[in-house]
Image (cartoon, one colour):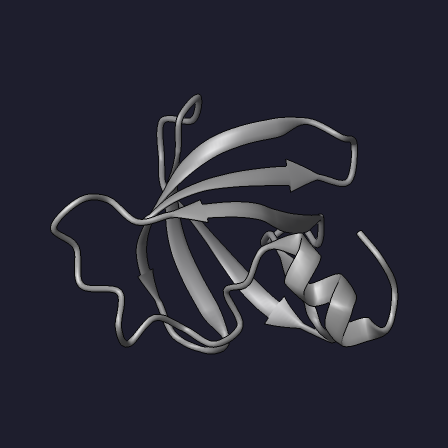
Length: 87
């Protein structure tokens, strides 16, 4: 999956989801040399340094089976709707 991530600072980056389960995900971020592991803590995805990251969008890579995709991986609008707010 291709992803658009937004850091607390407002910085946006493109990333590729490499692996995930309901509590962690491994992503390759376009401008970084190494992969990053994000953890799902208290309803938010956070880096190892504790920085919150919002998943703004998801786009399936053609010919990729996403039928068993992680339930926690939803764009910001979906998260806001579940929280009772508008995005």
